[in-house]
Image (tube, rainbow, N blue to C red; front, top):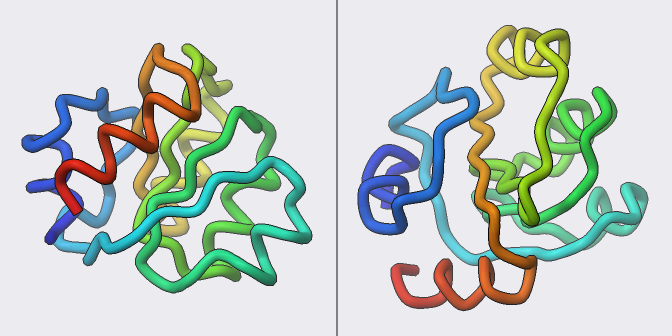
Length: 108
């Protein structure tokens, strides 16, 4: 499923969507960046509460399909601009990581 269709199916909010045709499959939940780099799979939805610029680098290295910020986490405009520049899709939701994962599992 594309990132654009994923958003339509879940209702998650778009923070940054420079790559709407990016494939989305599976999910990984984690906040320890080194674990995400080593364990998230290509095209995964990465569910996190991390909000610093390192998430863009990790998303690029892990080749995830998008970052999903849970629990109402927001980003500084500089992080959003960096994500747009690097082609990293970022979505957000107010629900917990657990509840976000449940929603992801319903559509993927």
